[in-house]
Length: 115
Length: 109
Figure 1 (cartoon, rainbow over the protein chains, first blue to last red):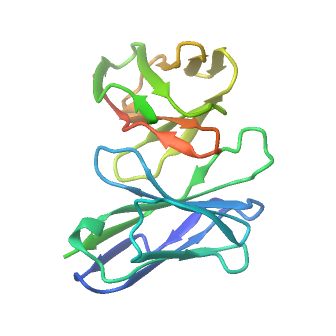
Figure 2 (figure 1 turned 90 degrees about the horizontal axis):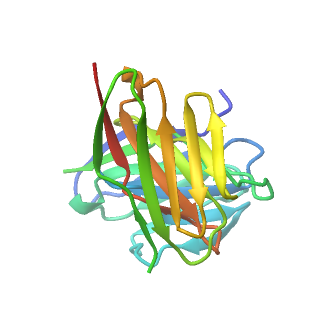
């Protein structure tokens, strides 16, 4: 399978715990995006990388959220001191900057439930 | 501010045709995307329009009018598996995708 993969697919945690999600993009893609989505809403942009550089981060993103893409390949998203409001689907997407359409392709998502 | 509007929900009959509209106001425009999202799954890419006109891809077509800030997705010969949410998204001047909330399409037999 050469698509975007995410791990884990589901995560249940208690409030106050830290969680980390992983995303492996399509291998030749240089851009990687993180989104959050709640029921009945479109994806909400969190941050994106071009290669290993984090180019933009949503102003709505709390300091409890951090993302890395150390070698320009896979990325991790960490949420510290989770809150119940963090419960959502976390989506990762990748694209090839330079391609005409810059189409983003999504992974299956990680569903986070904070108890 | 930036805004994407699409109907919250639509219902159609199996075998029929349905048109899902999207209007947008964004800072710049570098293309409009339609994605399909089944419940509990990730969005999957359907179409991309950057020039005015109609793009046809099998049973699905997408239309764009940049002067009107308007697009639609046309689904023909509806099948039960087309029941899903359809998301409209615009690539703005910063090449960031601005998303609508999605239109939930319900197909009835």
